[in-house]
Amino acid sequence: MLPLHDVRVIEFCQIAAGPFCGMLLADFGADVIKVENPEGGDSMRAWPPISDGYSENFASVNRNKRSITLDLKSPDELKAARDLVRSADVMIENFRAGVLDRLGLSYETLRKDHDSLIYCSISAYGQTGPRAQEGGFDLTVQAMSGIMSVTGEPGGAPVKCGVPLSDFSAGLYAAYAITAALMDVRRGEPGRHIDVSMLGASLGIAALQTSEYFGTGNDPAKLGSAHPRNAPYQAFQAEDGYFAMAAGNDRLWRSVCTVVGHMEYFDDSRFTTTTSRAANQVALKDLLEEEFGRKPVDYWLAAFRDAGVPCTPINSYSQILSDPHVKQMGWVQDLKLPSGHETKTFISPVIFGDQQLGVRRPPPALGEHNDEILSEITGQ
Image (tube, one colour):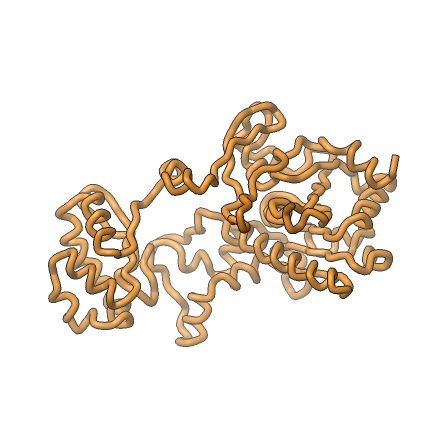
């Protein structure tokens, strides 16, 4: 019995941030009903890779859900959508601000006969403010939020993070805010409107950078893989490739000096403190890479692991997904798509007591549960 087994969520969402939020709640047992347009549904259903007519990208953020198709421009189907929301504890939407208001699906409208409704809006910039009417995707929010200003090599062109941080951080913020609101409702408090913006979420996870600006008045700069406060703490080039190594304190720095056979570095005035090493990290990197270039990656990984210094290869996704640790954790599981195609997926990484939050329902075909869900709200 998962903790949200008695919670019903209606999801009016597309692409990533909203569906990811819905999936997180579904992983913990919520009955998440995804409402989609009959004409194609969530546009991510068309995103590659497509296996036997079904998007594996869509599958990656829509497991454990049911799907119903409703045309919100049809009065009868709009009424069905409202009835669905009345049957639910939570509604999630990621339309532009004001779109659902015009359809009569605003929080203020729905709360009139559903005082306990938790209504979560996820958007690029939030429901109020000068940018509320602007649309946005992960790329544009990474650019707006400052993420792209600190991503990439010094002097290089703007680069976004390869992982869609703005989408998925917003989904995470929304999921935990909804869970907190559910606790209030269970205590007898009314529901509420939760406003989650991708911009705010992107700034919220940038504490390292915002604190640097607040503390110094200076904009954080691109550092490649390096760290603004710590060194050695980045990717280094060895004889046959790159590896990452993080000596985040003086004890570990001493171990690095021992491994490379240069204890004089430990007493060098440029490197005696965390702050001084960070300030002189370019010179430090040059010294270390002079040694690292003499031996292959595997040698240095073994040496640093033996010394207790955190280090790792620079993995591709094929390498990390087949890593013994990932296999032991059981995070990659088989998944059968509605098309019948057999694939794999990465499940929730959370171990909840002795429970693993795996796949209870495969991702749905478009409108797969129409009859089932409509019978639940009509009683027929």
